[in-house]
Image (cartoon, rainbow, N blue to C red; front, top):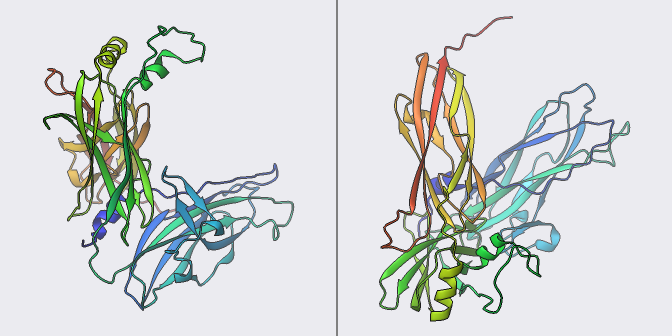
Length: 434
């Protein structure tokens, strides 16, 4: 499958290592690293370059010059999406030996930035994707003077694609299962049960849950989208259930857990369920796995009896309106928080409708995603006002469409639409000479 670099750039997720800060009373320090993730493409046996900008962000009177150490380290991603760094996480597709720096130890004055230049050298036999993290440490205690003891570090992910040929994305569902509710038929549930369980916790357990683990068996990373389709015994589709994962990009040799939840009860009978995965690639490859399960008469009765109808608004969005005052040539980023208030996984699509606000002024980052129950996410709206824009008020609307799982034929829409108005007052930028 041919790799689409535009897809990679558009869907790149933020890559940030855990940050440890230890600041004594007599020192103030801060650091910014950009970009937090980048893809570098190189031919076998060739060289290319990339750069990272490190900034000492503090400018206060107590801030002192700080040493900066740059090191390339291995990292891995767990099936749950957790990042781990260090020598113990070395792997066969490490990019450490491919990356070299011109300057890996220097000093930054308060407010100063430095561009770190690096080279990538691909061996003749390299093939596919390799990765490592550039670990940047600000403040080295062995070299610090004057009682400054600062520990601050962050990582920039570097993914090297050695473009030898067109690649086919290869994925396998290595595990999939359906978890159906279990009910205690001997006792009724109370507010204060012996196990300390709340009614909300009980309701979470009384939902249909789908688990699947997807493994990347190929040589290149891909971004996976997952859904589960529920069918009757005769393969009549009853519902679709979005599958959630913490990190959609799956590196070669890695696997990722996906989970879907539907809170509505099912009738007694036999059911089929198909787990379905595709990618954001132009020539996507579909991966499926089929399962079967049954719901007994007693389970269906208890399920319906204990189900609380979920009539609440699915999403909570803050803020509900943007009012901005910007000058021509200005670039800014506005964020809004989307919280899933339902007991099911939901899929969300964000778009933009224009009134007088031109579409090319606005860009929504990561506009399509999935949220697990009680989960929230920030969506970034980048706004760039051209230099030649006319002063005045410009209006548009961000549309947020959310779809939750639901059985068909019940006369209730599973789609909810939210609108966030944007009002931008644009004034002319006037340069002043001092």
